[in-house]
Length: 358
Image (cartoon, rainbow, N blue to C red; front, side, top):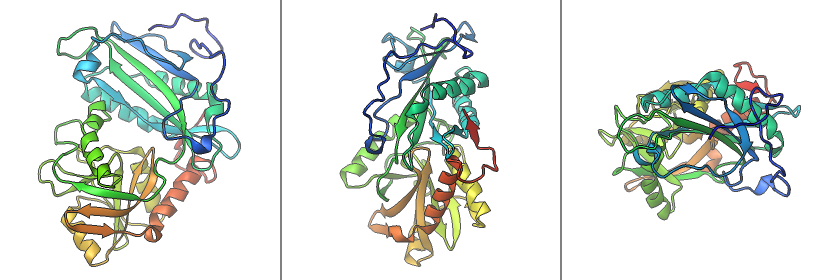
């Protein structure tokens, strides 16, 4: 899918849309991830090198049915956001960390590494071009979705030799409109030691959909995942990392290779420690959580992720136990969420260098 366009002031060719689809869109009422911005970034890997990237109007991709990604799952993605600052400038939140995780995912799936300049400079140019798509609504942002997949037209089971990178964006509001109700999943597992649980491989998410759907049919938002070996240790919450506050200490499962190393997870840990909250990255069993609820030492629980930011959890069901955590008790979750949002939108100093202005 190469681009043969006349170069602009950017470092690579850009083909602009003839008419923006932005007119008439109400950012305050958008379902999450349902309306997409005007342009997308595309790049091809062939003959052991990356070809010149280009930005083109957002639209369908022409792919043959024989490409290996559709058969053998050599496909990964990332997700992060751009936010409009108080001074109307726009900044990406921790894109270098997402870039590093993207390449870790690529390495695990035997895919070529993506050059940093291609990823960061290309996305910065894409966001600059579609800057009017960055919402001004409180709590909203421009979600950035890079996808990377194999394009060999071959049915041989092997790492592909050709690949495509595509990055598109969409304006989004909050992922969850209410505190979460979760069901502990004991039959299905999300990841297993030695697998791809620490990556954003597309197949990880496909394998989670049945459990999520079954939980939603029972009135829950999603599931709490347990470890694959013993089905006793808590790992994640749906597609988020998870935190529990027990005796004033914030506890989150450790990064053991089966848990996605969330960028927001790392941000929340950093901010909690700056707030003089003790953070313990350790294994926590579901039975320990039940006991902590019974003796009232468990005060709150919340999930964290790019889409959700910080999402309070009001109830977790485990067998016959309903662990109730009223929303009014979620004080720490709200405090750290407000601090994180203030940094992302430039209302508090970015002392960690998390923002990349575009």
